[in-house]
Length: 180
Image 1 (cartoon, helix red, strand yellow):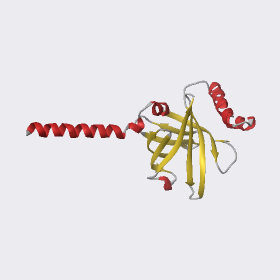
Image 2: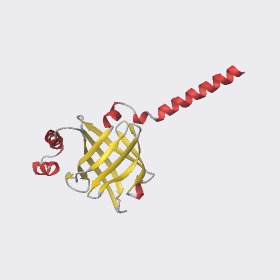
Image 3: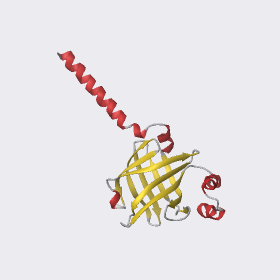
Image 4: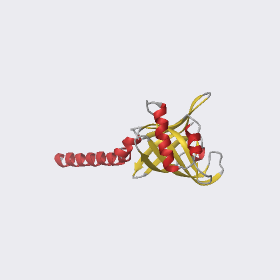
């Protein structure tokens, strides 16, 4: 009897451990490993506007190996966290499960974003925004180009960004605005 109970307990523990491991699969794998790190948004495109526009410097996304993410920005008065929570990656869908956000309507929501990684240092995110942070109905798609923050020569980094933008844009003036 004791052997049977011990065996059943072992099977239950094994099933529990396997189940816990399965729930963490969203934060493992080669693609997830490539996403882990600090990113800065470089350009953004709203579907209700024409073309990509430059973004202010200092808007970052930190993706951690423990399944957590955080967006933050630097301001004249210091840095502020704009959104944080957990994430999972399933194929080309990166889903942020939002815990805290300056846009209170996002808290508790699951925000699915289409993700594409390009080269080693670029990430494209595309997501649908029904309502903005001011409660205004938008119903638009937003595309963002993120560049990995690395210790590197800024001039070389800008050359790589220019090449990425040329794959999307034809107007050299707009490309220069994004980079300068």
